[in-house]
Length: 119
Image (cartoon, rainbow, N blue to C red; front, side, top):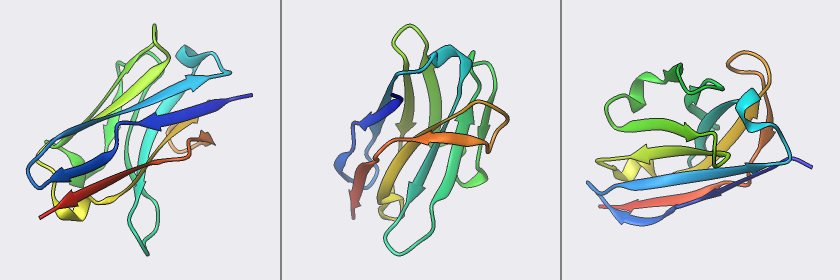
């Protein structure tokens, strides 16, 4: 049974930083690309970025560049999302996801972790 468990969310002031983690189990982690999405209240889930199975290739949405960084540690079966210079509009539930094929073909999802940024 595949499980993706996010952690590291919380309440932070504007300008602050957080590092989200997503621990994977039940799959051969190094065979999967991993993605991050977020969903703000009343809005659609939005792509943040993706990292390839080996960690060499990453894709990021334009609005996240310079503030959000994705990395992974295949020895720990974990993918990370570093958030810096957070803004109130970054308030959302953040989800990690795993894919077997190309970017966009996500098959497994975590339950999400809440990030709340106060002004």
